[in-house]
Image (cartoon, rainbow, N blue to C red; front, side, top):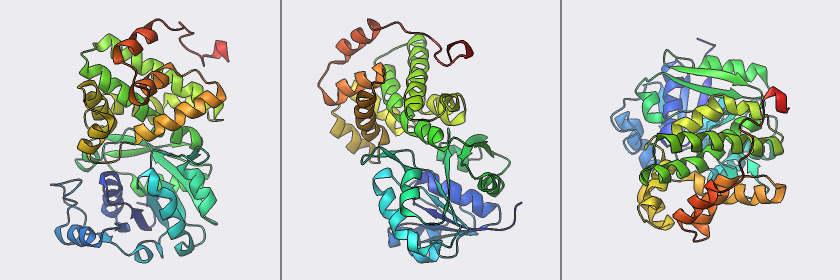
Length: 340
């Protein structure tokens, strides 16, 4: 084990709880901050996050609290695991509380509308003297706490930060791989939610394995194409934070985005589907932002455009499917050595 660190995890959801429990189980003094004081007290007393991860016992080394200063004031490492809509607000709140040189890791898979801003860019704007990283990958929290073998990615330009987080969270069932392409890793985590809605919709309509394989592969092409225009490395999308997260999110009903697509296919309105799911469905907001940005940049993204038409422009699913199959038959692999 690395030298003991003091760790803070901001966010009381499933993934924040899973990460906090790994750090605590590895012997690091860990605080998990939640906005709701009553919920924090309940988790602390019961040693269980019954709202998000019922039935899983939490380490005695994990302290749930609602006092932000208590959580982050002495922290060496801070993970921010909250929805993107609240991310900047929380980053701004913690900024004056952090020690100089604190490692701050975003686990949030989303994009801020203003300026098409990624979460680590929000941290760059709001924090002084912090060391910034991103943790992303094909990670369902329920499987992490159930000790299913899981791989993820820690991305940063700071090699010492990468090494520290790898050691901090390393366990027999959780493994972290390194990547220096922070923006590419973040884009992978955000963009894949769009395509999870697409594949959920297709699955609910009875599409077969051929169709799903085509959708996943063309989704990966769109993600890489968009990433290149955003100055990220398209090759990042061949790793866990790209194709790995894409496969996971697009093939499981544990994914909220996938379930939303299924609900739309069954005739629910977008508003009704989101209300039934009851948690943030990041892909909806991401789709709006990516469609607008792709149009600005002239990036060809037929799947994202088609989904936008279904959700926001009253296009019928049948018409959109016909249009997609009649569209341009482009190069299969755009970033092969021959085409670079």
